[in-house]
Image 1 (tube, rainbow, N blue to C red):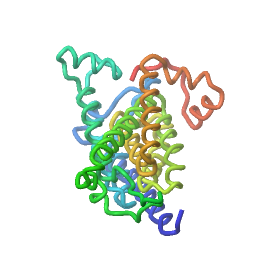
Image 2: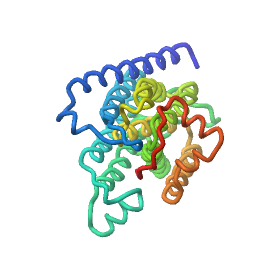
Image 3: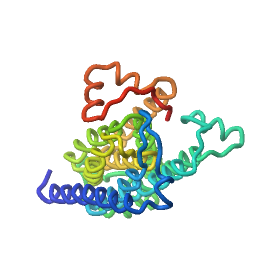
Image 4: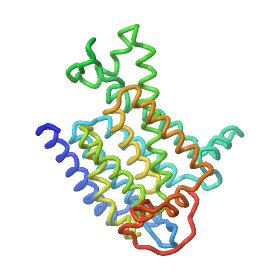
Length: 305
């Protein structure tokens, strides 16, 4: 990582972390719509606040802008808004991807179905803004970076690249949406989704992603309250954190890498329809200890997502 890149990454992480903490205090002192609107009961039967979610969204978006990633800011705000729709207006009659798609097939539009479509649109927009494809010279060497808007429209003005450009956008958008959904699926225990965000964003930040430092900074700031069982991400924060990881991935992966990432995300999502991630984690040495680290433990049955 070059010195300038390192300074930019540090700035993004600090802005995201400080922003998340500061916004959390502001929202906590004056919750929009009243505290009851944001109060829920977690898996252990404790009363927690969902305000951690919007705090992370706004803090991470500010960090992404500070790090030069408008795509990251768009993904965080878009995915966060869709998650808030589910948190505040969603119902519990349909669960999981299959449940929402089944309801849609029967003519009933759930907030989950709106979120699925919205995340796909947000992902494509973020992929376009990030630049769907890193252009290369004939000898395979990277071309010096161009403005994101120019990289996004480049396939449209080069007929031979139209199909590839569209494919890059669709796959990139699907990676962002799939990452948002996967991190949300992990958010069944305090700290789990935030730990996953930190474990993924750290290496991506070192690899040069402009978005990953913001995700890491915001996750680190939100982690203490989440582990203590006083606040939780909800769909608002979990979807945003995952979308940031998705943008970080497409920033650093080429076309084949994005396809591999999408295949992994799709596989894990389909597996989650049949297998409990919590059961797998708790039965696997190593994963079990990392998952439980720092958590205020208390035995309780799992609450379906």
